[in-house]
Image 1 (cartoon, rainbow over the protein chains, first blue to last red):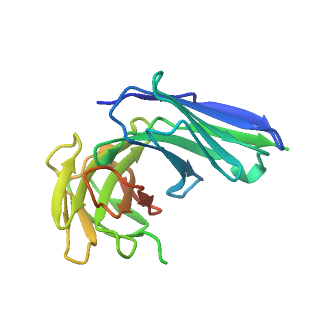
Image 2: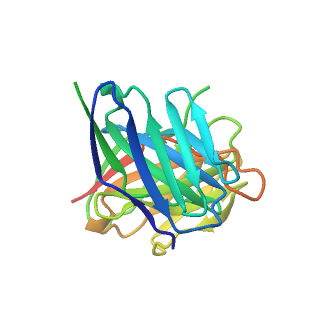
Length: 109
Length: 115
């Protein structure tokens, strides 16, 4: 199966930028997703990038894809305390999603 | 537009029992996928249904099964429950068209606890 690796924790100050990184192994992934999970809730689709793109910007979110290195990143500009959550990288494998363990983002005032 | 609805939100069962979880997809979505989330294994894909047919299956034992109805609603069943089945079970829906993955939208999950 596919391996998806993310760092487990990230702590940033409010107002700074956050960068969450992800590496994956399945080069056939056509869509690469970022999901957010708050305590007690399901997964919220934040954004996604198609494999033939290298960058996508969506308001405060910027996704960068380096397909050669199989590296995906999510940048959150002007991070707010409400952004504290677990963020999952999820490349697709056919119809299924392969999830990393998630990065727990803590935003401090 | 209503999101993905999962019922019940919480469930407590004992070992050896069976359980059925329900998922109503977003209106117009024909694909429903199920995932299991545990602290140890993270999020793992169970199966995916499209037009009442199982189109893709993860690496879970046969105790885990599912089905999809003509209105795209889906149920998953776990028989002979084990302590290790305690998890958050998440359902996701997507349009499901074409031959590749499309954005999946998740419900809030059913938290299953096995005593």
